[in-house]
Image (cartoon, rainbow, N blue to C red; front, side):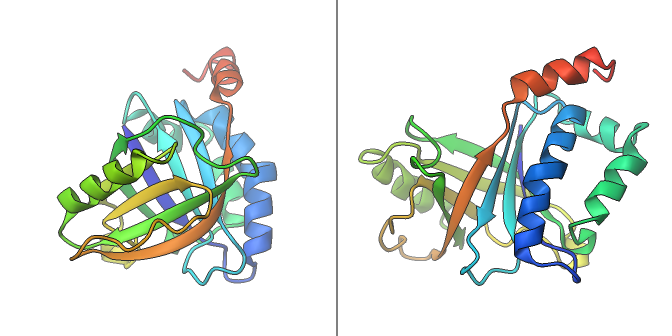
Length: 205
């Protein structure tokens, strides 16, 4: 199962602090606690006008496993670390259906990745468009939102789907009926092999 989440800095911080703290402190800490199969952060470039700072990706084998961590003995420590840099009231998560459409690196040689936020009812057209792009590009994937979290708090994930492309090249116009917003990001991914070994060795499996 895959989920994604848009996250933003707390009001008295800024994007630079948020992204640095996330990578240097929070991501390594979270990777030790959570039994993720995969864990990546797509940090929105400083120049982009967007209501969040980062779109994170999480893959798990057991969808209940993260909940056990959140409610477990490390819950207070985890929450305290999150409160150092992010605004909990504006977390915008979603469960997605992932379509990996071409093999290859998720980002280019310097970590650049494009997130194309799609809105509209034409997810079949979105998938056809992504498949067409995948014929000529490596690392193409489409995440279709299946379930949004926290809608009652006004912080539901801000798109119906995300098209992921390596590099920052514009893919061209979206199909009719779909609105597209391009976000330039820089992708960071955690090697979960070592993190998972630590998690199990500490008796948290």
